Length: 262
Length: 358
Image (cartoon, rainbow over all chains, first blue to last red; front, side, top):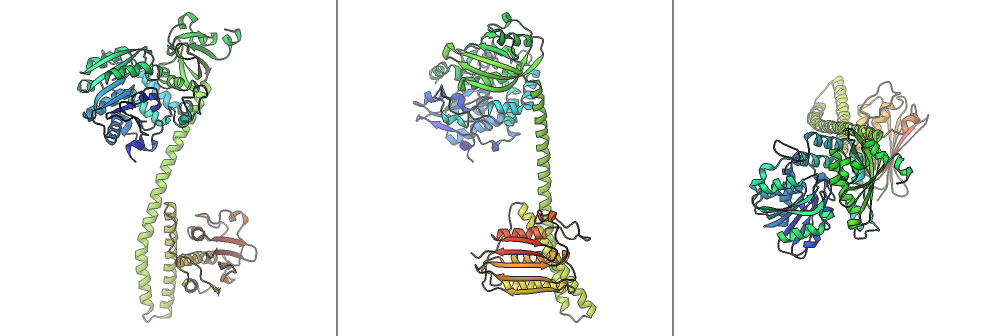
């Protein structure tokens, strides 16, 4: 099976350069539905699902490969190769910011620009570094995900039908809407929240834009500044939005900032 | 807020589009051991445990934005004193843009969480057990397949040695020994075929058919009967063939089927009564091959599982074989698109193979 099928890659738009949008932990490519289409006039836009999310091929899951973010980065490289991406733009939300950075380190020619929405190189506090969570917090999260796969899948997994109040979310979502395989979601959570990519930041050569929200408890402003200070060619834009998902709550601002950058 | 909602047995909370808490009910404040003033204006995620905050921000908040509501999500609150309170959360958004208000309803879910944990553990154990058993089963079947295959070569040597010896001048006792040897070789050969067919079937390959026009079938039937007669000279096996049309089939397989049915009749039938093999063509051109024996009827309780593998008679003093003969015979019948039926009463037990002519 091709990486394009495996990851349910969807492409649109007609530009020369490719923009690849990657979702974070907890959802699937639907995360980008308010942002990605706005770039179709000028770029070839691609969105995809990591294995275990949305419409991906869950049989491709390999617990060893996906024990670290490198495994996810290898998938980005595979998708990028199949789409023939050279000098493209990678837009990663949440943990995908670091996954994209790892992919860019593996294939420096693939992405000339990186957009990181709510990035964090390490979620767990360390000496002189404030990630926002203690080791116990993350252990607690993993235990609760492990303990509770039924509730997890029941709340996140079920198909939804069209929402009559908001017709723009049509029937197409019925099968895939932040759908997660609970076992795989657990593995993804472990890989994500125990990651430490601080040492990789200085090696990034691509131009990098960091989009930071206020009051983001997953990736605080302090963490965003850390990322900015350690990636050589980077800048940070503060969004007038709170929470961790400005791609959903403030798509206008996110799109404008990305447009200015690209 | 109404008195009813304030003290209802559920937590209630509303927050604005920036996540700031607008209103809470008394019940929720009791759970959290906090006051209205402390909660009002603080961020909604403050009421959750750290793990709950991550789940809320990465999964529930996006769903609420996309879908407008979430039902029955499971996470933990954290009281001021650090105690964790498992809850079920349902949420719904009203209004849009800066007017958007989200309402949360929380139900205590201690018992449910406990139950889910037990279910999750039981499922994990069952899965581990199952995959271990499956691995073991596959290994065993592969082992049997290889064993069966390897047994064939020495058996073929014994068979040809016996055949060569039988053309030498021998004493009567020597001839009898050769006859018994050939009978044993033949039984063992059939047993190996059955075991191999069974494991192949289990490993997913199915029983292979080598279909021909069936002209050789009569010869094959005579030969099978002849071989068994010579292996069991003390038993009477009557053969009646009134076949007119030839039927498309795998001749060797039908021979194997007959051999299995005869083996069954020889083992379980009354030794004093003859076994009858009848082969005929019906009006519609179908082939019918039946094997009849006298003796004790098959108990009704055994009928249901008669063609299952490894089923052997329990009322027989000397159970022999693996219990694969009837199973393989019925698989051969099925693979041919035919049927294998049985009737059994105090007078006789009859197995009938019917093969439609197509």
